[in-house]
Image (cartoon, rainbow, N blue to C red; front, side, top):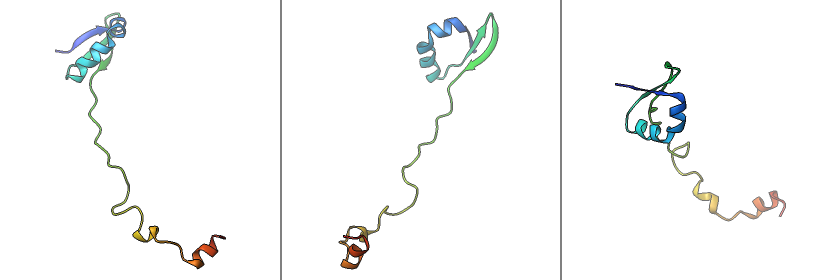
Length: 76
């Protein structure tokens, strides 16, 4: 059964209510005995992997020294 909690009481006990929500409980928040909202856990978001493309981020040749022609193009 879902427990009904007065809004003022919920404000006072928010940390406790959130801990109970994390354990799977749900609450109806009410003002003057009239239900206005439901406090319940959200579905966990899927874990995202970093990166956006398969394979290495830089080609192996990235670390090779620049040739004289390449250095000239950079103005060195």
